[in-house]
Image 1 (cartoon, rainbow, N blue to C red):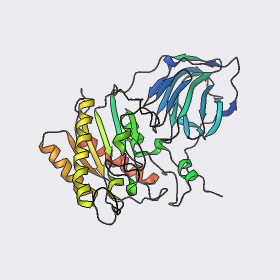
Image 2 (cartoon, rainbow, N blue to C red):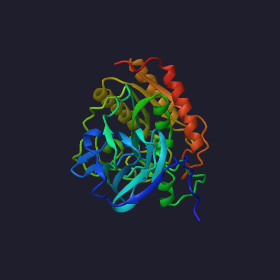
Image 3 (cartoon, rainbow, N blue to C red):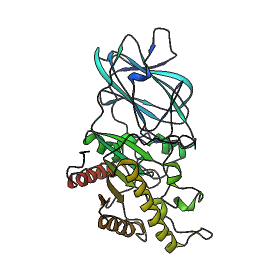
Image 4 (cartoon, rainbow, N blue to C red):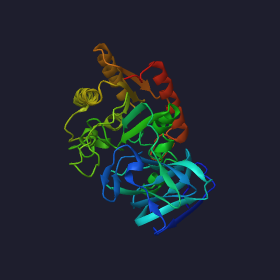
Length: 359
């Protein structure tokens, strides 16, 4: 029997799955606050990136969420605490949390997993006797986390490295990753624009050489090349965790670049990404992250060189070394303990930068 992942205790509320009845009132989209990249449709929102979230303030003792998603895992939080862990299932369904203390509440549905090949549909919220309230003001602080599987928190709930594909997704929860932990600790709005296996220039083990992270970063949905993201949400801080996939495996015979050429072209590609980030967001502060890669430590020296040159050019950028990680999550990914350590290190680095939140 597979080991179940660690999940936070759920609120003491009755959870049921039912079809939508006439007495159940769908909440207007205008009352729902969207966080992250999602495409609005007449049936709700489509999303592929991890950490996309939908928030509703309401009065009443029950709230439901409408989903049609056979791939993704979600968590429904009530008043900041996990109330319902949602597993994938085919077809339209409404999942309820009932038995709440009558009064004002905040419900937040968060997409725990990434699904670059599969679009999930979130229909929205449903109330039974309650009423929606105006959305709360967004936090003034905003952080975008750009990265790969470390940022997506892939396999972080697992206590073992060997996982089936099903176990990987079951054991992935971006809300317990360093990115969301950091944003919440700092009371900051967040986006986790992360995609596993992708590099700045070279993907893990040289896979899919015709594309890289930059191919998908401008998109709202991975699956829709025409869904260009508008970059209207502008963070004051961008945390970038890319490069592990570029250098964690040796260059194979037949690849377009040898190791020396990869390092040279990778630096140029990363500089281009940094320039585009500044152009889109109005010169935010940037923190570049990385760690030792066995056995040759190819990534960190390049990141030091990159950041040093960028600083000399007058840019607001810093480097954060994750240090030693136990990597006992699925497929040698950071564990829950690693993510807590990474969140602590990142918060300390942000504090070190001083007042970065002013316009």
